[in-house]
Length: 149
Length: 117
Image 1 (spheres, chains in turn orange, green):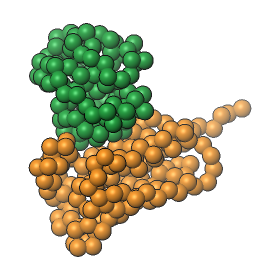
Image 2: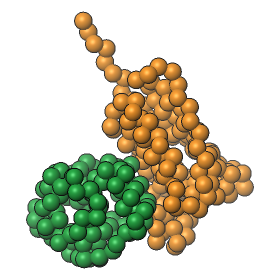
Image 3: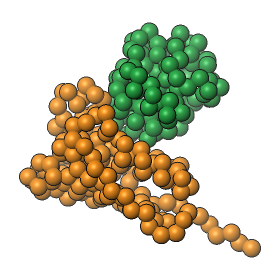
Image 4: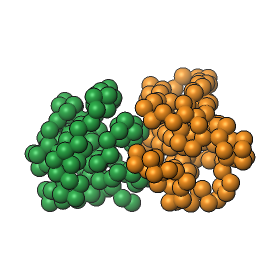
């Protein structure tokens, strides 16, 4: 992998199902180009995509900040939405506040945050009512073994 | 099972991705909830769904799923097929409803091993 840090910023639009997932798709393509192993790519893609969908569905859009170095990817997803009153409850599988309209689109099953936790290596969530939510997702890459001569 | 065999078993029509017909699939997953797909699916599955929107293709992209079957004769909009084509996926559509389509694949030997933990 190339040295240094790659930084990217994405705007996640509100309530736009047509473009939702484009940021995650773009990050996935970058990781493939960098030669990151498939398992880490999938973990990153799924956790970022679920987070992106959450921001589209619940928060009226937001921003994703992505940093990639040789060892890991750090994704920060920030929104200015209504915030999550009870994070422990929101982390439970099956708990959802999504509308029927969202459920008809295949989301809102209450699996988003649990999936993000499952697929990320480090997951932090902070939320303030009326101010928004910040997710920090880290996925580590397998460090390639040095070739012994 | 190869994708061309899936097409035969389901009497399916190929909308895009003819180049993958000799690709092997190990198991199948029938789901309308995309988060469930992301929670449980393993490698090389065919995704059967009655949900028809762009997020089905996006979910498949994130999960490295190469074959999507739309059941109950649903025909996806062109932009859905276009996105799948861009991703190198195969899109099939079958007139069979979800239960029958899953049953036909299961009877033909796609027993779902590897989908769930």
